[in-house]
Length: 187
Image 1: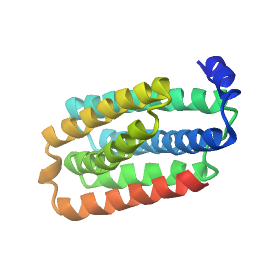
Image 2: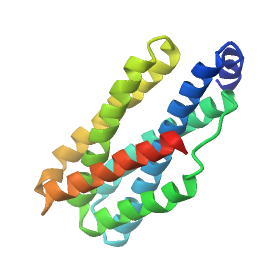
Image 3: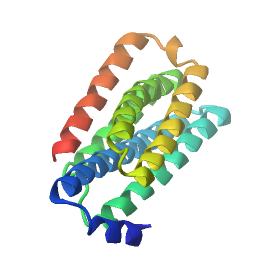
């Protein structure tokens, strides 16, 4: 896939390359952060003896994020672009958000998922419109957006809204997700 992207990227204008590099950078950063969030959640929930059912749900979501991350890594390589220079921050912050939410319990971990995936759904919706001239990337974003929405629905069905302080937790995590997007687009 990266070779095909590299050949196609040679035909892009400088503004197109910059726009696509920015999109790929922020999406790769987001998927990397999601991978770290789920790792933090899994580590804490396993230590605290969460049910196998809860662990399996989060492992399923994490596995899909791994696929998304690999796809964006390939696209970045094909564009001969770069990931966010803030990746060390995403490494630590993602894990911390995941672990902290899981320390509040499985429902709070799911509340974290709802908050993040709500923001990602909005973010990917904008990108789907932006990428109309790039059908392969648009299709990839649409597929990933559907899977992110699946995560949100699974989290809601798992009692995310029953978390004590849910509205505050959701707003706080969503604000952090929006800030992360803003930063990753620029750095």
